[in-house]
Image 1 (tube, helix red, strand yellow):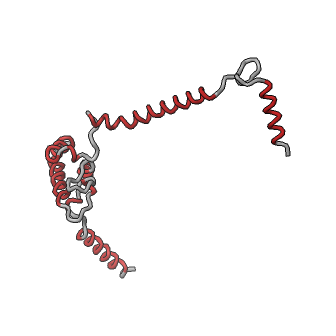
Image 2 (image 1 turned 90 degrees about the horizontal axis):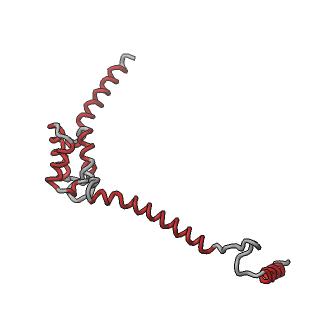
Image 3 (image 1 turned 120 degrees about the horizontal axis):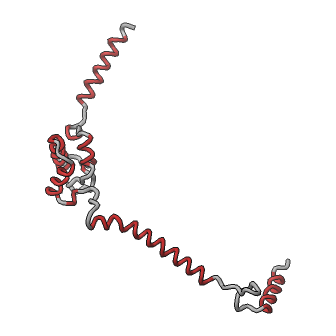
Length: 165
Protein backbone atom coordinates (compact mmCIF):
# COMPACT_ATOMS: atom_id res chain seq x y z
CA UNK A 1 0.00 0.00 0.00
CA UNK A 2 2.77 2.45 0.86
CA UNK A 3 4.40 1.97 -2.59
CA UNK A 4 1.17 2.94 -4.39
CA UNK A 5 0.83 6.33 -2.67
CA UNK A 6 4.00 7.88 -4.14
CA UNK A 7 3.14 6.54 -7.60
CA UNK A 8 -0.37 8.00 -7.37
CA UNK A 9 0.99 11.35 -6.22
CA UNK A 10 3.53 11.41 -9.05
CA UNK A 11 0.85 10.60 -11.61
CA UNK A 12 -1.38 13.32 -10.20
CA UNK A 13 1.44 15.85 -10.47
CA UNK A 14 2.20 14.81 -14.06
CA UNK A 15 -1.45 15.22 -15.05
CA UNK A 16 -1.59 18.65 -13.41
CA UNK A 17 1.58 19.85 -15.15
CA UNK A 18 0.45 18.49 -18.53
CA UNK A 19 -2.93 20.19 -18.29
CA UNK A 20 -1.29 23.58 -17.66
CA UNK A 21 1.27 23.10 -20.45
CA UNK A 22 -1.30 21.94 -22.97
CA UNK A 23 -3.84 24.57 -21.98
CA UNK A 24 -5.98 26.48 -24.45
CA UNK A 25 -4.66 29.57 -26.28
CA UNK A 26 -4.88 32.97 -24.61
CA UNK A 27 -7.81 34.25 -26.64
CA UNK A 28 -9.84 31.14 -25.80
CA UNK A 29 -9.53 31.84 -22.07
CA UNK A 30 -12.31 34.41 -22.22
CA UNK A 31 -14.71 35.03 -19.47
CA UNK A 32 -18.26 33.83 -19.84
CA UNK A 33 -19.35 37.42 -20.33
CA UNK A 34 -16.91 37.91 -23.22
CA UNK A 35 -18.12 34.66 -24.84
CA UNK A 36 -21.73 35.72 -24.44
CA UNK A 37 -21.11 39.13 -25.99
CA UNK A 38 -18.84 37.70 -28.70
CA UNK A 39 -21.60 35.30 -29.70
CA UNK A 40 -23.64 38.28 -30.85
CA UNK A 41 -21.05 39.37 -33.44
CA UNK A 42 -19.89 37.94 -36.76
CA UNK A 43 -16.24 37.40 -37.62
CA UNK A 44 -15.26 40.00 -40.21
CA UNK A 45 -12.84 37.76 -42.11
CA UNK A 46 -15.64 36.79 -44.50
CA UNK A 47 -16.25 33.28 -43.16
CA UNK A 48 -19.87 34.09 -42.17
CA UNK A 49 -19.38 32.50 -38.75
CA UNK A 50 -20.07 33.83 -35.30
CA UNK A 51 -17.02 35.52 -33.81
CA UNK A 52 -16.53 33.04 -30.96
CA UNK A 53 -16.88 30.09 -33.35
CA UNK A 54 -14.64 31.15 -36.25
CA UNK A 55 -12.53 28.10 -37.07
CA UNK A 56 -10.26 29.38 -39.82
CA UNK A 57 -6.70 28.27 -39.33
CA UNK A 58 -4.65 31.34 -38.57
CA UNK A 59 -7.60 33.77 -38.73
CA UNK A 60 -6.04 37.02 -37.56
CA UNK A 61 -9.33 38.90 -37.77
CA UNK A 62 -11.12 36.79 -35.17
CA UNK A 63 -8.13 36.77 -32.83
CA UNK A 64 -7.79 40.57 -32.99
CA UNK A 65 -11.54 41.04 -32.52
CA UNK A 66 -11.52 38.68 -29.54
CA UNK A 67 -8.55 40.49 -28.00
CA UNK A 68 -10.35 43.79 -28.42
CA UNK A 69 -13.48 42.28 -26.88
CA UNK A 70 -11.46 40.95 -23.93
CA UNK A 71 -10.00 44.41 -23.40
CA UNK A 72 -13.48 45.97 -23.30
CA UNK A 73 -14.68 43.34 -20.84
CA UNK A 74 -11.56 43.70 -18.68
CA UNK A 75 -12.19 47.46 -18.49
CA UNK A 76 -15.73 46.73 -17.33
CA UNK A 77 -17.51 48.35 -20.29
CA UNK A 78 -21.20 47.62 -20.65
CA UNK A 79 -22.56 45.40 -23.40
CA UNK A 80 -24.14 48.35 -25.21
CA UNK A 81 -20.85 50.26 -25.16
CA UNK A 82 -19.01 47.26 -26.58
CA UNK A 83 -21.70 46.76 -29.21
CA UNK A 84 -21.56 50.41 -30.25
CA UNK A 85 -17.78 50.26 -30.52
CA UNK A 86 -17.92 47.20 -32.79
CA UNK A 87 -20.70 48.74 -34.91
CA UNK A 88 -18.66 51.95 -35.31
CA UNK A 89 -15.61 49.95 -36.34
CA UNK A 90 -17.22 47.34 -38.63
CA UNK A 91 -20.72 48.63 -39.41
CA UNK A 92 -24.05 46.89 -38.81
CA UNK A 93 -22.89 43.79 -40.67
CA UNK A 94 -21.02 42.82 -37.47
CA UNK A 95 -24.34 41.78 -35.90
CA UNK A 96 -24.92 38.01 -35.90
CA UNK A 97 -28.62 38.71 -35.41
CA UNK A 98 -30.00 42.02 -36.66
CA UNK A 99 -31.45 44.29 -33.98
CA UNK A 100 -35.21 44.17 -33.56
CA UNK A 101 -35.94 47.79 -34.38
CA UNK A 102 -36.87 49.88 -37.40
CA UNK A 103 -36.87 48.04 -40.71
CA UNK A 104 -35.41 44.95 -39.06
CA UNK A 105 -38.49 44.77 -36.84
CA UNK A 106 -40.62 44.60 -39.98
CA UNK A 107 -38.42 41.78 -41.29
CA UNK A 108 -38.86 39.92 -37.97
CA UNK A 109 -42.66 40.24 -37.93
CA UNK A 110 -43.49 39.64 -41.61
CA UNK A 111 -43.09 35.84 -41.59
CA UNK A 112 -45.55 35.51 -38.71
CA UNK A 113 -47.93 37.93 -40.37
CA UNK A 114 -47.71 36.04 -43.67
CA UNK A 115 -48.44 32.76 -41.91
CA UNK A 116 -51.48 34.22 -40.15
CA UNK A 117 -52.90 35.88 -43.28
CA UNK A 118 -52.21 32.78 -45.39
CA UNK A 119 -54.04 30.56 -42.90
CA UNK A 120 -57.06 32.89 -42.94
CA UNK A 121 -57.08 32.94 -46.78
CA UNK A 122 -56.92 29.14 -47.00
CA UNK A 123 -59.77 28.77 -44.49
CA UNK A 124 -61.92 31.26 -46.41
CA UNK A 125 -61.23 29.59 -49.77
CA UNK A 126 -62.11 26.14 -48.43
CA UNK A 127 -65.25 27.53 -46.78
CA UNK A 128 -66.39 29.15 -50.06
CA UNK A 129 -65.64 25.98 -52.08
CA UNK A 130 -67.66 23.88 -49.69
CA UNK A 131 -70.55 26.36 -49.84
CA UNK A 132 -70.46 26.39 -53.65
CA UNK A 133 -70.37 22.63 -54.18
CA UNK A 134 -72.96 21.54 -51.64
CA UNK A 135 -76.25 21.59 -53.51
CA UNK A 136 -79.17 22.94 -51.53
CA UNK A 137 -81.80 20.35 -50.59
CA UNK A 138 -85.46 20.96 -51.23
CA UNK A 139 -87.18 21.03 -47.89
CA UNK A 140 -90.20 18.89 -48.87
CA UNK A 141 -88.63 15.91 -50.59
CA UNK A 142 -85.16 15.98 -49.06
CA UNK A 143 -83.67 15.76 -52.57
CA UNK A 144 -81.27 18.08 -54.35
CA UNK A 145 -83.00 20.73 -56.43
CA UNK A 146 -83.14 20.08 -60.18
CA UNK A 147 -83.50 16.23 -60.02
CA UNK A 148 -86.94 14.84 -60.67
CA UNK A 149 -88.38 11.78 -58.91
CA UNK A 150 -88.46 9.87 -62.23
CA UNK A 151 -84.77 10.52 -62.91
CA UNK A 152 -83.89 9.37 -59.39
CA UNK A 153 -85.89 6.10 -59.77
CA UNK A 154 -84.30 5.42 -63.16
CA UNK A 155 -80.80 5.94 -61.71
CA UNK A 156 -81.56 3.57 -58.82
CA UNK A 157 -82.77 0.84 -61.20
CA UNK A 158 -79.70 1.24 -63.37
CA UNK A 159 -77.38 1.00 -60.38
CA UNK A 160 -79.22 -2.12 -59.16
CA UNK A 161 -78.86 -3.78 -62.60
CA UNK A 162 -75.18 -2.96 -62.94
CA UNK A 163 -74.27 -4.16 -59.47
CA UNK A 164 -76.04 -7.54 -59.64
CA UNK A 165 -73.64 -10.44 -59.52
